[in-house]
Image 1 (tube, rainbow, N blue to C red):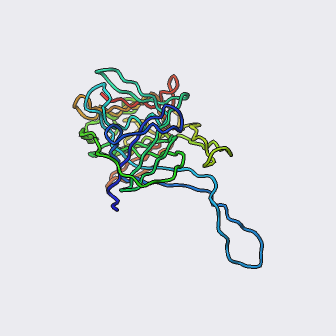
Image 2: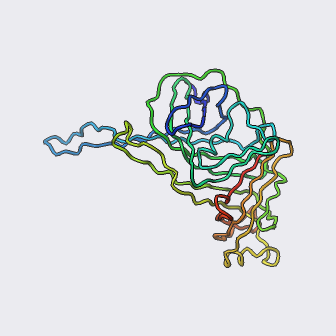
Image 3: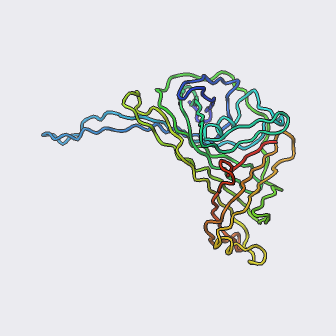
Length: 310
């Protein structure tokens, strides 16, 4: 059995925890660095007796955490979802709405009600893990000259793995675009940054139930604290007042994109109000730089982060 023969299928559930049966032809997503972490509560029987030998433990509540990475790219057709698997399913399972404007754009932004969930089929060569009721969070990372990546962390309901292999998969041939000529600005200032990070930082909490076979009836989306960071070259305050903006708690719009130039594969990420949370000095190959953590704040609400594909 081979490590590289790993396949993930993802499909939105119509009812929480009910397997919608994703297929290899319609729901396969290209991923890397996958990790499946079944977590069981080990109930050690620490009873007193004549022998010091340990007794066997039983497993109580069970859940699964799945982590992996994907690239951010378009569908290949402007304002149209593809027939095959796409990362939009994962955004939706992480508390984001999906808005499709035919022929124009696909947009994702946070919601505070009506949270969706997805089922994952993870094939590790000939072993299949079915993880239902998945909800989670993500972190977007970008480094100059490299494609934007998303680190996903999803929690779901445990189901016993079985022996199975996927049918022939259908995957996107759209190529991710490198982070170049990206139009990155904060408060209209075009910082000279080599990397940027955006973390939705959603909180997923287990709803426990003695009536459920695994002890956890639902993974609940209970909050988010969207944040990020970037590493600008240090400049005089007269050029851009980093320190004054931090002191004043200044709110300013952030823009990243458009990244790419081909219709159907152009990514733009915007935030209406971000704040500098700290300013730390750095060294970028001998050049003085800053490491600036960011807080993403609402404008009207549920709009602190908007991802648009055009």
